[in-house]
Every structure is written in structure tokens, then in C-alpha cells.
Image (cartoon, rainbow, N blue to C red):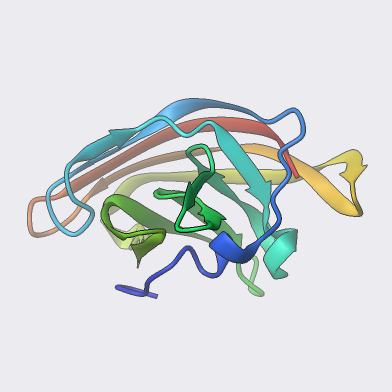
Amino acid sequence: MEGSQGALGIGAWAFTSLGTDVKGEIRARGKPFGDYVQKPSECYSGEHQNFFGVWVAPPIRTVKGREGFQGGLKLVKSELEVWNAYVESPIECEGLKCAIRPVDRATCSTFDVEVRNTNTSYNDIRVREGHAKLDCKIPNGGTLHVDLVFCGCS
């Protein structure tokens, strides 16, 4: 995934965020994520791409006739029931294609992710809610701090 471009096909999705509520921020400094603070406002169920998890992101934009977003955090539960996190840097974008990098949990003193299904579905997509708290110190001097709470991810 590292260095891949595009929000993993996200620009091509027909998104709906019904009642999305996201609080918190993503704060990155140094390599490999860059220097930025982002306050995501949307979240989407990973069910759109056949994974259990969510994509927490800024508002959708239209660039050259395509809809998508720049930046955010993707939380994916593996087949082995392990949570993985991927950061899309909003400062490394060409149009809607941005660098996506995995978070190495070995660099994190805190890696607390919870995503759960609610009892609600929208267009046959299970609505999800949860939180992500990450505190990571990258060996080359970079840091990543994520403190997000989200609900209504459809």
C-alpha cells in the first residue's frame, strides 16, 4: 500500500453519509506522513470495498469531474481479526490521487481502534461507529497522533 495513489478507488464510489458525526483530528509531523492537522468530518463503511472497517475523511470534493476526498484514515480489520490503519496524506496529492501509507503499529505506544456495527442499515450497508486513538513515533523523527470518535458511517 505504501506510496500507492488514489483513495483505493474511493473517488469512483457513490458515497452517502447519512447522519455522519466525526469528532477529533489527525495530526502528523515529519516523515513519512508530512506536516498537517486534519479534522475529518465524514466517515464511510468499508463495506463499499468489501472490508470490515471505516474510512474517516474530510468532505467530498469534485476535482476534474470526479468525486472523492483528499486525506483521512482507513481502518481495516484483517482476516486474523487484527486492526490495521492507513493514512492518506492530504499534502501528497495530484488531484484526488494521494499517497496512502500503512501505520506500523510497532511504532505506536497507543494503537486503540474499535469499529462496531450498529443495528441500522442504509441502502443495505451496515452503519458503523467507533473510535481510533493512535500515538506513534516514527524512527526517523516523525509522529502521528490520531484521536477520532465517529458514528453514522454508512
